[in-house]
Length: 117
Image 1: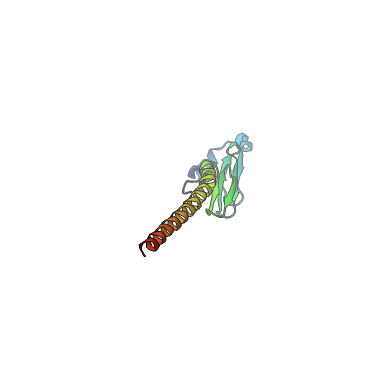
Image 2: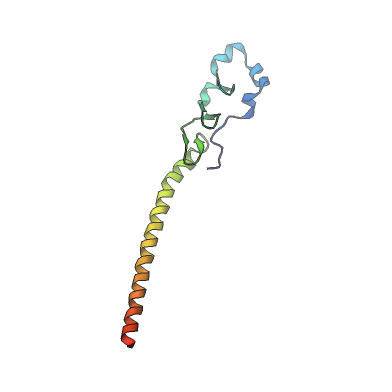
């Protein structure tokens, strides 16, 4: 999950960007009180208190991955949520199959050793 979760572009932090906004258009923008970013309301930006950044379409902060889940990495997060348990099940099945195989080989070796004596 090394994908940027949807942190807004740097231009939203600059004072020159803030000055270009006309007074009548200010109602279309929202300002984060914590990081002083000004973004259009349609971006649906929410501040994450764990990462201390604003994230577009913030879903939640994942403590397992230590990163926010937002616009850019939501699909990756849910794919990981499905594939990690599948790999765990496949690993467990492989382990059980290997244990059964080893047991059968040991049983055959014991039988061969008994037949020689």
